[in-house]
Image (tube, rainbow, N blue to C red):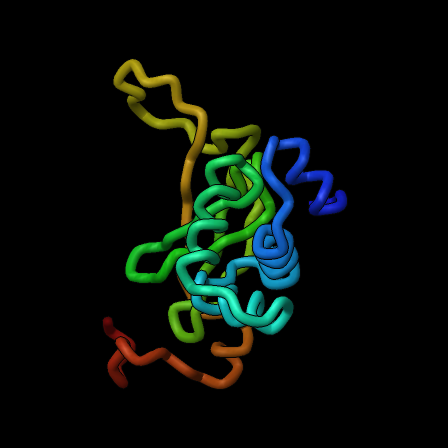
Length: 151
């Protein structure tokens, strides 16, 4: 989000509340954070706020296109404010670090389906899995891998 969060909320016809502003700031400061982590960040900024209130704000901001919800298989939902460009993600199997990856090929939807079955495809969701440089450097294979390196 390159503009003032107050202006962003107004442009989408949303009331400006302390919770909405705090959630927007928290997601901007910590992209790919889980809702639980965002609750803690928001509480650190504005004090007492219910977990449900943060979830409600995340839902409305996602509905309005201000946030993007990402949920890789076997992982809790995460939120980011990089929206509208159909980028992808790379997730470390060991430490759960997530980073953005630009489109695999060309313009959105980035990937061309072999068969579209008459659908008008406008988005491709791709998650790459592996180990981040830090986990590779430490030799950490992650909890689900055996000493032989098999899942």
